[in-house]
Amino acid sequence: MSLLKKLHSWYVCVGRSLCVGNGDSVYPERRRHLPTTAIFMVLCLPSLPAQTNQALADSMVIVVNRNDPDSLAIGQYYASQRGIPESRIVELSAPTEETISLTEYVETVANPLLNALLDHEWVKGVKDGSKDHYGRERLSVSIHDISFVVLIKGVPLRIANDPALLEEDTANLPKQFRVNNGSVDGEVALLLAPPRTSMTALMPNPYFGKSSVAKTDANRVLRVSRLDGPSQAKVINLIDRTLEAEQIGLMGRAYIDTGGPHEKGDAWIRAAGEMVESAYFDTDFETSKRAMDYSDRLDAPAIYMGWYRTHAQAQWRAPKWPVPAGAIGFHLHSFSGTSVRDSKTWLGAFIAQGYCATVGNVYEPYLEYTHRPQVLLAHLMAGGNFGEAVALSLPALSWQSVAIGDPLYRPFKVSLEEQLKESKDTTFAAYASIRESNRLLATEGSEAAIAFARSRFVSQPSLALAYRLAQLYAAAGKEREGVEALKIIRYITKFSVDEFVLVQKIANFLHKHDESELALRLYKNILEERDLDKRLKISLYEGGAPVAQASGEAALSSHWLLEARKLKTPPKP
Picture 1 (cartoon, rainbow, N blue to C red):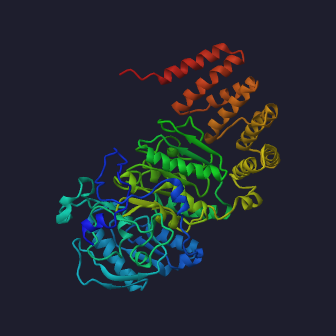
Picture 2 (tube, rainbow, N blue to C red):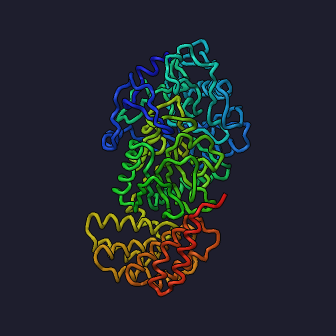
Picture 3 (tube, rainbow, N blue to C red):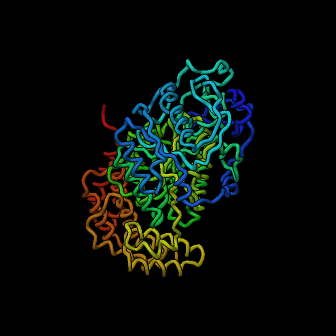
């Protein structure tokens, strides 16, 4: 397909595209309007043909790089854990760097992989007979039944731009699209595309937001995801924790951070948050322009969705932050996936910390061509797997996207009802109880919610559940009962790093309801911790000052306010 036809006849986007980085409009004149509201996307979720995980596993292809010592080991481990025949592993001899040239991609990834698929008869097709402009072998006709292609750590991540290989008609394109860089994953997805399919600019994804996909399109597209990360151990951990989550279900809280540079992106993320909240997850929304940091609650982050920070920061860079098995992480940024080996990038940080499913971009994608978080999440919450959710939520192929996670992963395979029966002894079980109390509050009222939360608190006491129970009591006008529930905290002298903000919220609740002395003890306890983050210290000093004043410790109150002021004062040059 010619380059102009690629942009003209298959191009699907909203009338004015926005750059994730700077908001520049990019060549809107020839594009058809695509509804993108959350309601539309949720209503149009597909009813794709159901297949068992084993049937999908039997038809997967795992791609490893024999030049990377970790790659084959990870691929074999993944195959063994998912029951994928080891014969479905394809070994390439590719560079071990994350970024490769376009020529290296063609010679060491595209052509060898295409021929391997043909040799194994996983793809049946007729070769075009000549190589294309880039040196790629192409198929005039192709048929396949491959469920997913999984690229394993060691397979290169992204392709560098090569101006020398731009086609002659690229002068007719806007500057933003006159590039042939992109993710390896986005090009592998179009390995079976027709001859003369350009690598410049992008190709609309036929799966995007569809209720069904034409067989001709399905035979020309491969659904691709990646098992990758900063180290072999981190990728193995991802595989293990994915399987654990499928056994016990996803448990924890949701954190939704909007306030990005464009309202459209905010709307996508906000819609995702509303879905999670409607599924009764305890959910925090941060709507200001500031970045979330250590002064924000982030215990049990089962689902995090936010934007727009260049690098992972605060809790997401903490080396031992407790993250639930199967956690889903999404941070919308143009360069969130420039590397997955570096834990400074969002994708690298997510995998390093234990998240199991995430998506991002290797170069500037422009906002309209990034994954839709609300579509991704809606498909998962409907019981779908990660590989399908990625395909449905991604507007463009041959572009900048990458998805890290097991394509078979179904985070909502286990229902909340089943979680409550089976998961009492797991680390984050209390959060399933909180979710059920939220459900009861919405469907049966406060008395049912309180009764359930109280009964679970007796059998599985936790600070998070105690705080939720206190909130339920307070909303029902029973503040004293809420205070009594929180007094369990008197017997705890040491808190984990992810509990500091939760403890502060408990202290504030106690102070508000005339238990200032206990609240002050909690503030003092946390402030005795070593190596507290500066923003958390400021929050604690400023929050603790009125508590100290109310407890008759005016000098301490003044001291804490002074310390907060010092921390906020810029250092002298």
